[in-house]
Length: 480
Image 1 (tube, rainbow, N blue to C red):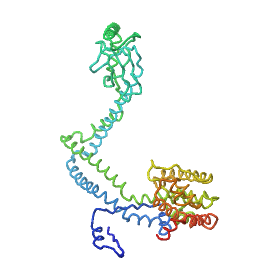
Image 2 (cartoon, rainbow, N blue to C red; image 1 turned 60 degrees about the vertical axis):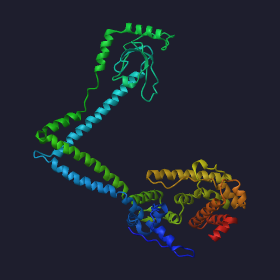
Image 3 (cartoon, rainbow, N blue to C red; image 1 turned 120 degrees about the vertical axis):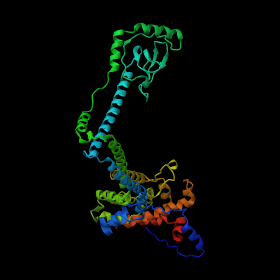
């Protein structure tokens, strides 16, 4: 892709400085282009969806996105060449070895998933058994440094992230808090015994007396039953495993003398094929991204009635004339008569919520509303924006932000003749930032006046423009 930039000559222009800026790589050119709602209705209205989509696929933004996948595409080409070589080593005279290898891979995957599920089930059973323990329960600790007979002093907290950790006293007089690693199977009380209320695990004599009583309570029959219980475990097997094993035995490649050699190449092939497929999926997600975004924007506009196929509706014609970041919210406010009944200063105040953005979330000023009507309209706009954002999430686009009415009070005062000092004294805002924010507001109010059509709202918007353009704002508007 090739582009050209034109620099207009003016007095004081240094050609060497321009040449140096053009040749340097310090400032890379990155596209910030995205298909907005206003752009979508204008493109569809001029050339239709199909042609508009083709134009977006040729944009600089799409070129940059596609360029990012060049390296991945090169890796895929190398992988395809390697797969061809693997396929030659996999070839078997007795039959389709890839079919045989796929069965082996399927069997491995099922066994692995089954093993994971069994381990999780066993862990859940152990946790469940530990949560049922009570003080005085005599248990057998199967493994670990403190394996053997023990009595539960404290069952531990059920909320522990690593499972319950019961405090026990072992037959060897050790008072320790156990962990999940000390239990390889669910634990059940062999019997119970009374723990003296005055028992102190830090007192050696108390530990010695309780451990002696513990050894005397061991029951041979219960002990044998516990041993048999610990030897049992889930023995059921996924029925698919037996079916696949039978298919493997019946497959002609099962009798190949070079079966394991072919199998090693097949494993490499299947792994590389899976990795390559993932790479292709990533490329698919990154190509035609601008066009896909355009499609999703058009779907939102279809639902709201701004587009009807390749036709721009009457509501869409109004959206064509709105160029702000919140163009769709402005259009919906116009379409639903949200601003009807406001005077000029109130209209400017609520529209400021669409142009003003606090510098940071922690600097967000508390919105002050000059009149009750401004407060009610601001709440309506916020609710309307929330509904539109929910629709955006449904179609996986994200353009809108919530209105910020932190500038509304200052705008209303300015429209009613307040001086710059009066306004700035109530806001943490520099004079230059104030003027910049007012110019952005004037631009959107002018768009509203243009898109509103004949009627009282257009008249009110023009009155708001006159009230906004005074003092330093009027001066900067004339000279800029």
